[in-house]
Image (cartoon, rainbow, N blue to C red):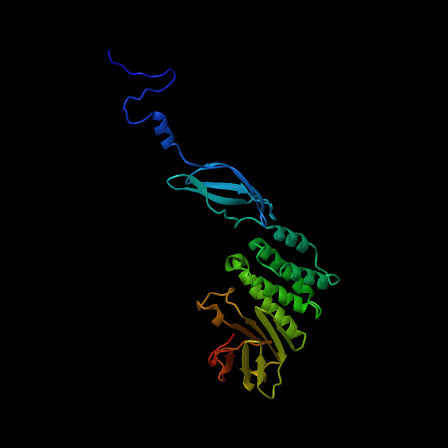
Amino acid sequence: SSGINAEYGSTPNISGKGSSTESTEKNKPKLCPSEEITERMYGRFEWSSVEAGKLGVSRCFYNITEETAYAKRRCSSNAERAYWEAPDYTSCATKKDVEIHQMTSATVTEENAVEFANNLKEMTNSMEEISSSGVEATVNALEELENHITPENTQSFVDISSNLLDASEDKLNKSKGSLQNLMTKMAKSIADSDTDQKIFTKNVDILTTKLDPSKPAKMESSDTSIDIPKSLTSRTNGAYLVVYKTAKLFKPVEKDEKMTVISDLHFSGIEVQNSKEEIKFEFEELQKWTVNESQ
């Protein structure tokens, strides 16, 4: 008589098209393996095994807030296997962020303001290892330092601001408005001290000048030249100018960043609108143009 032959404990092959064990293995979800990795900037992460198509999370090694933050990593797959994609550390702090946070937690005083500025300048010389959290902590520290500006730390203050502008736009996103306001306040503070200064850095220049009411004036930075008519110099005793050599703090108007120069011009004690005489701006390697309205 005919029958089905099967060993004890095995599943009989009824269809003749292959064992159910093979079918089960084929339908088994692909898994990304658990692993532990150490990143130079972000520290150690433990990734648990997850199914393909799902998102894995791992607690950030460094953190400068009270809230727990997590890195994310997607598990993807192809016909043969599951594999991990590159981790997203956007929510995580870096080792340098922690160092900046520890240093900037100290109270800025008149006695330590110069040393504080010099140390912060040194720490921000390279923005590659500083995340948005570190940028935010640095801007907060600049706000404290701005209350203790002296001729000895003015250059360092502007250097730190210029260093921050080396960061990517996504790192600067939360701090754009605050940093721009700080630069304007800094320029005004210098102008109020009744001194002429020219501070040139890689990404931003600050110029302040006393104005002679009897004649027009000219302000020149490394990239910009501005002619101020007598009708304005006769109404104020000073002007201050911030020249940005990058558009990262502003809504971009040109795709070619090399062609972007943004000048923020102010006059002490007055606001200018619809001036009858032109204020002439001239940019290096760009055609001369003029404006009749300024704020």
